[in-house]
Image 1 (tube, rainbow, N blue to C red):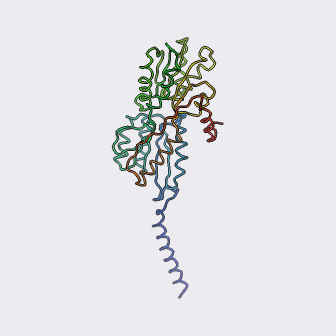
Image 2: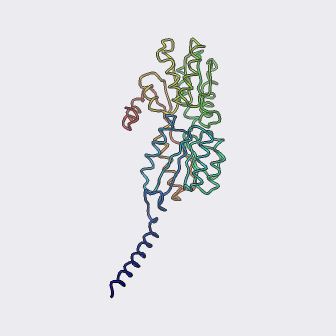
Image 3: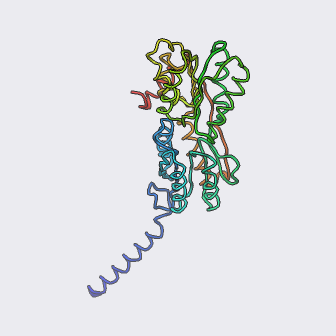
Length: 328
């Protein structure tokens, strides 16, 4: 056989092998999001400026690393409904296999999550869930219970005829509204002697809480307790009075169990919080989306536990956060 014919045969065989390799390249699990064997998941985060939301983003990334057939892309909604909704639309357009949405305002995001379902894409709402969307799943904590565990101990801790201030999350946010409702039913209705001398929407924001607390301290010589719908706002309010002896006995209640809150509780500055573990929430979200993607389940709705953190058990959570590098 001539050299020319041998080269021609070699080139034909090479082309066939390359063609076959191309046909089989998507057959198995891979960390390359372009491979057919990898599920592409978008997480639309409410914002990464908030301490809890940022913690959740980090834990979602860590949880996703445990699934080699899954890739996670994070989009920051910057606490802006238009940006959250635009991120959802982009994720739909880009053909993600599943989209997990942490709403900024549940009702503002509702039609966009409905669009995910209509596009045949797996939809999960989390922290807070959006109720009543047919075909969508949810992973959350029960916000009523989160506030109730604080209100239950505040019944006996807050003195008679006390003056208190209340810091609320965004209006229309499921967690904000349900936590405030729990405080109303489980505390204020049972303690009619307690007077609210200041109440404002601080939108989960520490700086906003500082501003409102400065006004309240100026207007009131006595404030016996800070009732906050999250830790971030509680911490901000406490900053205002931390060096003021007139408020040295002030009580303070929050939700989330953030590293900062556990430190404040451990040192006796803050009274209690309810742990909304971003670790548990992230693991539950990623496990849930994997079950939905692989066909193990068609729809899932679940809540993580609500654990009360007080001075008695705060050190355990300080240790946990220290081990994870969240407290230096």
